[in-house]
Image (cartoon, rainbow, N blue to C red; front, side, top):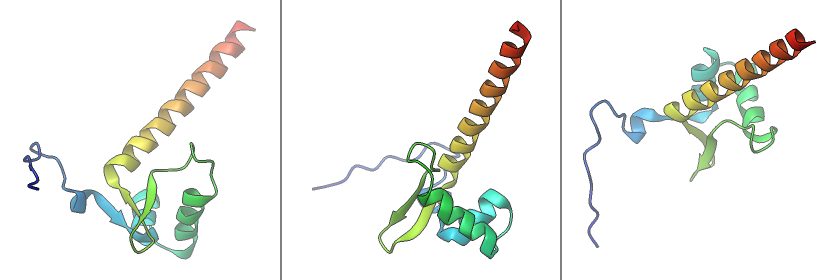
Length: 97
């Protein structure tokens, strides 16, 4: 069976370029530093939140946490949009009173 490969569109990162591997890389990407506290936050984010609230972090093969930079950025943008929408709803509700 032959696999058909298509070239990626210009500017599209490869999986290797887009993938973060390990709690340390994830902590550096999300928090700007890699220390025990931020690594613990990553482990908690990946396991203690409800499934719909968790960031797009997964374990693959050797059980190391991994995530795609592009998916994490999209997840952060979704959280920001939800926070702005909630703040707007609260403001409009207060103005209606």
